[in-house]
Image (cartoon, rainbow, N blue to C red):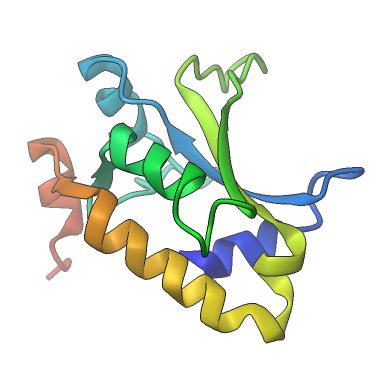
Length: 137
């Protein structure tokens, strides 16, 4: 997960944060939108499904956890680009210093563990994706 923070760290100029794209689960349409997201080559992006996190627990992690409260937050950031519209889009934001600095690996690992242990709810698959996940014979 945090490898993507590293890869995205230089995407946004004049920001102290690296981004990891998320969708806000407002309703079933949000889930349908992310599950059906395709690459530029037309392939399903999230063949293994998508993870659902509990917002209340994410808030606790961002605001109260001593390892993450000063370096992890989130935003809602709707995409309005024609053909790529996404009203549910947002980002998890991690301080670049923490996201990319090798000295902060332990902190990143602790945050990742906290996300997995405290915020994770489930992995969601849609039946239409399951067939695409199977190996081609």
